[in-house]
Each structure stands twice: as structure tokens, then as C-alpha cells.
Length: 358
Image (cartoon, rainbow, N blue to C red; front, side, top):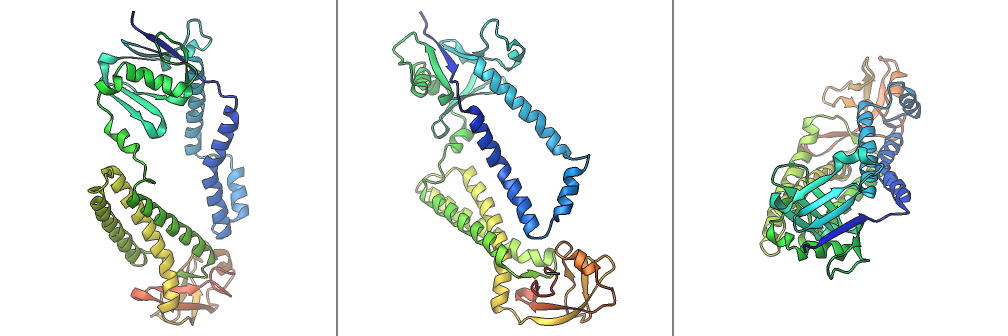
């Protein structure tokens, strides 16, 4: 008689605590971003209050997020109520007969082994993914979520991870069907390969430096256009190409998936570009020309400061000091400390009566 196994989902008593912690971690980057905006004077407290009080808030993106969160809750209810049936014919994820959650039956899945396209065990995430040939939605089974309800062979109950994995190995499903190459690459641990581990450490150092130095700097580039961004774009792109070549070379000795190489190269290019922008200001302070006091007048829009000396650049700084510059008359001469740095790029001092400190 063919073996038949029934798994039920483990009941987690701390599910709401975990969801609260997850929600906090999810919101932390957004909260940190708003704090940074307030610290940099890019966002005024009264402006934030007006946004929150606006009847049109939250924006459409938030309204789209609400049904996604609701569907996630519905899916969790289904999985807590459903059972996982595995036998020689296939795998079925079904609600028990006369379940009060019968309305969630559209989430049930029935996959025959003969219809399977690939079966992948991702050890790093303790996950088994089954994809049918029909292109229907795949089934992800997290081993730690399920426990054996009954057994028809020598599989030991009481330990969900080896039980569920042992059933798939007993039926030789993971041997009969190929693995999903994308998931195999996702199983690659970047922290264990010597080359990727060093690169990740370097990226972390550069991110920390950029964040700290941005808080400490008291000078800023005078203008925001391609001429000012181009050196840093070129530097970031060059670093990305060089690091990609080095990782492909390292991959010959110890394998690194191609997608990981490309993804890390793009990430490193962005980080190196940002670091170049932040570090460029600091380098100009050390090797650039001296800070010179120059006379400027604001324009009618309070978005730019126009120099009396036509050899000096227009200073564009719309957020830090628009209210301050608008308090001045157009004809009033304003003193700004300007420094010419590398590649003819100008930057100005934010201290004293500069644009950043009204």
C-alpha cells in the first residue's frame, strides 16, 4: 500500500510578536529617512504635519499596500488551517473537510509528480519549491512550518524539518527532477566566499563613511547638474567594471553565480559613486583652492544665488535656505564663501551666513 503522509502547520504562539518586530524593521528605513530629511533641513516639521493632515494622504502607493497586507493575512489563515498531503501520486495543500475557512479554497494546490517541471531544495532557507510544467503558480514549502500528523513508514515524527525532507528523499523527488537554477544561485552564501565577503565588508565601510561624513561636512557643491555628477558616475562605473572582472576571475577558483557577480557589481558601482561624491567634497577642501568671499544676489525665485563676478558659478541650493534667501532683497549683496576644487568644480561653505545656515 503506497505511503501517505499528512503534515499540519505548526502553531506559533508568538506570531503577533514576530509580526510586530517585522513591521518595525520594515518601517525603520522610512523613519530614518524622514529623520535625516529633518536633520538636513530638507523637510520642515510644519511641512510634515501638513502632509499628514492632508485628506489626500496616504498616497496611492500606500492604498495599494493595504490590500497586499490584507491578502498576506488571509494566506496565513489558510496555511494555519490547511494540511499538506504527500504520497506517491503527488502533493496537495488542502483544507480539511467542512472547514470554516472553505471560502479560502482558491488557495488550495494539487500538483501531481508527473506534472512537475522542477523540484528544488534550498538548504540555506530550509525551503522546498515545486514548479509544475503548466506554468501554474509554484508551491513553496518551508520545512520549519510543518509537523508530521501521522506516518505510514519509518519516518520519525516530532521533528518537522527532517520529517518533511525525509519524505521527499524517500520518494526520490529531489533526484528525479532538476533544480531551479535561479533558486540554486539564491542559495549561494555571499558571506562564505572569500572574494564576496571582502567586497561586502568594503561596501559596508564605504556606506558608513558616506553617512558619517555627510553629517560632518560643512561644504557643498555649488550646483547640481551632469557636469558635477559626471566624475562620480565615471568613477562608480569604472569600479563596477573592475570589480566584476575580479569576481569573475575569483569565480574560476571558487564558483560565484553569474547573477551574484552582476548584482554585486551594480551595488558596488552605486556605493562607490556615492562615496566619490561625498569624498570629493572632502578632497576639494584639502587640495582645492582657498575659500574666497564673493558677492551674490538672489534671483526672483529664491532658488539660485547669482554672482556679481561672472567667472564664479551660480549657487543652486533650493531646500536648505530658500526661506532665508527670500527674506533678502534682490538688490541686497550677500557674502558667500566659494572654493574652486578639482575639475573646475566649485563648492561653498555652509557655515556662518552661508546657504545652509540662515
